[in-house]
Length: 161
Image (cartoon, rainbow, N blue to C red):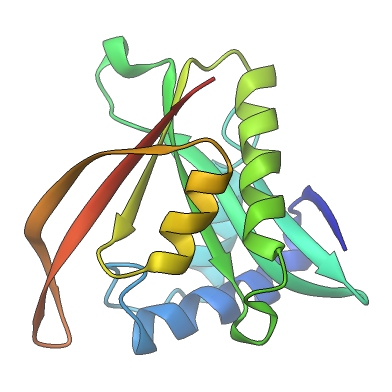
C-alpha cells in the first residue's frame, strides 16, 4: 500500500468514499452528497500547502485525507485540520494510520505548527488512529451536530508538529 498526493484521476473514487459517509454515517456532518463538480473544486482547494492524499492498494483508492486551514483569522494560519476517510472494505488494515502519518509529514514540511482532528464522538477507530499518530484529546464539544435524528459530540484532538 502506498500514499501519494491526490489528483483529478482520483476524484471519482474519493467522491464515492465520501458520499457513502455523507448518506450512511456520521463521520462527516455534511448532509448533501458531493457532485462531480463539487469534488473537482474540493481537489483544487486541496493543493499546495493544504494538500489531499490517497492511499492506493492493488491500483485502487482505499482511502483519502486532507489538510485544511483550521480557521480563517490570520492568527490561526499555522494551524491546520486533518480529515481522513477509509473505504469500508479497507478499515482495520492500517490505511488510516498511513494517511494520518503522511498528512503530519506534509503539514510539518509546509511549516505548520499544530494539527487539529475533529472526530465525531463514538468513532473509536479514528480516535485510536490519531492517538497512535501522536494526537491527544484536548476537549469534547457536546451535542454540536445533529444528523439522522441524533445529537452528536465532536472529540477534538491535537498534535504539535
